[in-house]
Length: 188
Image (cartoon, one colour):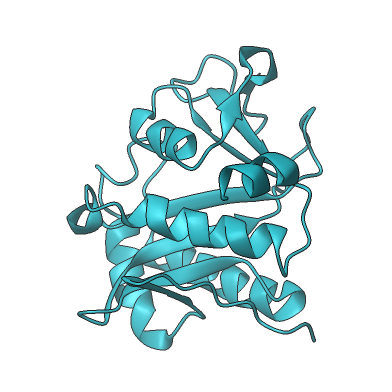
C-alpha cells in the first residue's frame, strides 16, 4: 500500500475521509447551486458511493480527492484533489485536479489555496508530469480557480463530454493544463 500523501496549508487540512463527512457531503451534493454545472443532484446513496470511491482510490494510490477541513473550526467544507477520469477523450489517460465546496465556503480562497497544495503534492511526492482540469464551459467560478493556480487553456482542446448527450446544456467542456516544469518555475 502506498504512503498516503496529506497536503496541508495554514488554513486547511486535506485529509482522509471520515464517517462524519458523509452527511455534510450529501448536503452539498444535493444543493442546486453547488451542483449547477453537473447533470444532476446526487442522492444520499450516490454521494456515499462517491465517498467510498474516494477512500478506495486513496488506499490504492496514496492520493485522491481529499476531504477538505477548515483548521480553525474543524468544519468539513468539501473536497479538493486528484482523480483519474474514467472516460475516453483525446487528453486521456490523465490525472485531473478538481474541487467541490459547500456554498458557505465559497469566496474565501479555499479552493485556490487547497488546489495549490494539491499541485505541490502532485508534482512532488506524486511524481506527476502534468495535471489537467475540466469543467462545463459556463462554469466561470471553477475556470477562475484553474487560472489562479496557473493552469492554461487552449480552445483547441475543448471537448464535448462523452458521458453527456449531444446538445446537452453542459456537454461542451473546457480543458486546462499545467505541466510540472511550468508549475515548478511559477512556484519559485
